[in-house]
Image (cartoon, rainbow, N blue to C red):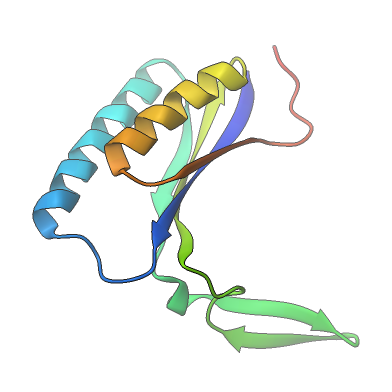
Length: 117
């Protein structure tokens, strides 16, 4: 099976209410258990706020180190999940479930060099 990256994009701003986050995390736990039971789970985790990022940029034979996100935007990568799926349609079905559970935009992308079994 191919591996797919499910990227979760969060809007900039304050975090949602704790009650809402509890419901989302419960839904994500259900999804993870289902993925694990089908052998489709690879890895997934949330990320800290983009303000915690450090960017390493090559320039003139040196590497510049800067604090903060690479790009300023209205949304940022808030977390990701890597899954195994037989094809894009199956990966998109999981992505839809993540979108409904989190109420966030989910980007589904295959990894390069993957061959289908």
